[in-house]
Image 1 (cartoon, rainbow, N blue to C red):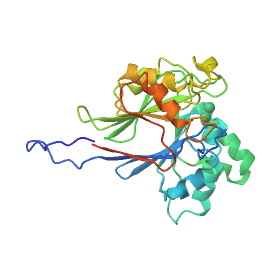
Image 2 (image 1 turned 180 degrees about the vertical axis):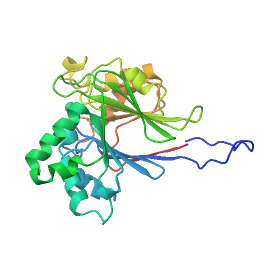
Image 3 (image 1 turned 135 degrees about the horizontal axis):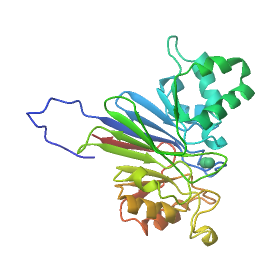
Image 4 (image 1 turned 90 degrees about the vertical axis):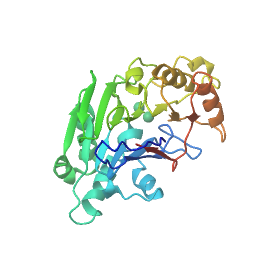
Length: 286
Ligand SMILES: [Zn+2]
Ligand SMILES: [Zn+2]
């Protein structure tokens, strides 16, 4: 959080209010209090959902946010723990949202959009055409891309190194203009990947997956199965000079093991490191 003295020569600007709510921070089959990883980013009045796992309706309910209050849904990739809540989110929007509330905008790669239509066809075939009417933006999976949301918010994406069957995009939200610009970056699922550095460069917060701990599983120290260790997350955070690092997608086997993941990342990265549970709220004031 930063305080600034208004410049009397510049037009009065409404301060940006930026909040990131962690809805879940576990891996695909997370236990020990960690449901699947997804997040709600609020920038002023706009609410952006990042990924949409199977428990999305319950995750939102737990934090007091109604599904119809979401404006945009961004998908990192199509794996079950990140996308299988889509039919339920759309079902809510179709049948439980107040009259006049439309469908959210869907932002994802073409591969994910095709997969989502397949999931809807399987789960709620009668509603496929209706949900296809939601506004959509297709992003490339093989090259960086940029998508302006409005005058204040730009989403930039980079391909991550996760799975040949599930192309994955890292998401970088740039809010406002330099030098007051705020940046929040999400890796989604990834192993070691050079693209994390531009994705996260100088970010105020990097939300990085750390499925494994190199201390608990030294044999996975280089990353495995398209996933990272906390050590890799720490190295990425240091190389990108981020201001804070949040570890997510943790495969925690026993209560309290989070501290091992945090210590492991902190050995590589000098800034603040956390491993948030669902319900944790980060506030960044622009
Ligand atoms: Zn995952
Ligand atoms: Zn995945």
